[in-house]
Every structure is written in C-alpha cells, then in structure tokens.
Image (cartoon, rainbow, N blue to C red; front, side, top):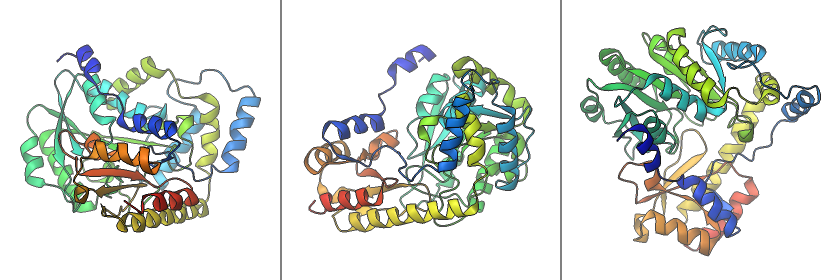
Length: 377
C-alpha cells in the first residue's frame, strides 16, 4: 500500500473519540492524558510576558536559540547526554511531531519499524505516513520483553525501532539490562532507535535511563522529549528531538515543511520550565502517586484486575471477569457510569480486547468521584 492510501486507511484516534464521548455524556474523562496538575505560575507568567512583548511571529525553524541552549543543558545534567544546540537539537510542535518528523526524515518506502505493543496510538500512523511497515512485539502482562520474538522480528528490512520509556500505556520503566539487549540488537542490525521519553520525570519505581547513554548508541539514537506532560502544558505544543547531526538533517527537513516552527511565545516560556527546582518535580510526583493509588485501589474493588504502573500516569486493567470485550465495556462505562476509559485493543495490532486503560492525571477529587461511580460494576 503506497503512502497516500496508507493515510486514507488510518483509523480515527480512539482516544480522542472517547474524549468526545466523555463530553457528550458529561462523564469524568479518564481516557485522554490531560494533566490537571497545576501549571506553575512562573511558566504561565512568562508566556503572558512573551506575548505582550511581541514574540508572536515565526521563530527560527529549529527553535529559539535560548531554548535550544537550555535543552542542551537539561540533556547534559538530567539525561547525561551531550548535544550541540546548533546542529543536534530541534524544537518541535510537541513530542508527537518530533516522532512524525523522525519517521518522515529517516524511514523510506517499505522500511520496517519495530513497535512494542501495547503502543501509544500515534506510532503506527507515523510509520504508515512515512510509507514504512510497522512490525510488532509484545510486552507481556508481567512487563517482560520476549527476547526471542524480538530477534525473530528483526531482519534485513528493519530500519528502526521505537521505544517509549516510561511506557504508555503499561507504565513500564525499561531497565538497563533490557536496554542493553535492545542496544545489541540495534548495533548488530544497523538499526536506528527512536526513543520517546516524554514521561521521564514521572517515575514511581526504578530510574530513567536514556538509551542514547549506552555504549555505541548515541550515533544511532533519536532522543525525543517535551514539556507537555511534566509541566502540564499539553496545549502549548513544545517538544524537541536530539540526535547526531547526520540524522538531524533529514529530520529538520521534515519538521520545516510540516510545522515551520513551534509556537514562539511558548518556546520562550518553556525556558522557565527548565529552571524549576527539584521541589517542583517531587511535589508533582507525590500528586501523581496519590492519584495512582486511588485508581489502583478503586479498580481492585471491582472485578477488574489493574496493573500498577512504574511510571507515567496510565493504568491498564484486565476486564476478563466481565465477559464483554473492551469497546462495548468502555461504551457502557461512559454511558451508564459517567466515566470514560480507552479500549485496550486500540494499543495493539490484533490483541487487547480484554484490557482497558485509565488515566490518573486528573484532579484527586475527580479521581475519587470516578472510583465511586464504578464501585458498583
């Protein structure tokens, strides 16, 4: 199937569909990843100042130089990675655009891209729109990788794999031995690794390891991050991609012709986000941990079997005890109980009918109310 037909064949976003259903039924929306943790006043004030000062036109396509400089500092201090802000960092319209630009820039017709399922639903369309072919390997219910399956999936047509850590929707935080296994696969097969690290600040167990820090990986890794989740500014659309200069050239071309630049005043304000102290991150993490525990205990009080996440702010739950498939389950849930969730099959190629996903990034009182509503399931 050629590129244009692949685009036409793409399904509508199930997550956005469930958000619309939540609005229609006046339900509590635990489907889409809206973080309701308060946006820091310093960030908001600086966005207002940027607009008032006249920063309302195009910025440099690759991103404001002052923001790229701060991202380089953050990558060095937090991720232990060194990148040249001039040639190896590009500011994008969110992490999703960074992923799309990486695919469009590096994946050619019928190149294969290995995706770990369950997956964030934008990955498959990104591969298809770049005229690549998605291949799938499954993270099991114990959050383990099937190493033999991965070896079988990788072949001479494999161009890249895309990795999300912490992982949406399972909440898995990839550990060093797993990353080293994938490192060896990438080096042996001359494969690029595209890493989506948007939830790197939201980790409850384990530690965040950027795969590009592993020996032999920086030259073949495209590291993607952003400001949406960690700073509760999903609507600002500011993300970034970092990679060696040789890989960045085609990524920048794709970025230039798709979005021109990220929103200028929000780029300026994002500099202040990177200046927040450790207290901000610890308080945010405590907030999300409380939300995680409320939803986990609430789901345990039903016939669902929830999986407690190590990171990010999503929770998968097994619904096999209800003798109904995921799409019917979430439709009944939003209509009859006023709580919106996402059917698990939207995160798989051909599985997941026994799963649903809940998002716990909402206000604590709202999460408690949602759990009371579903307590009679």
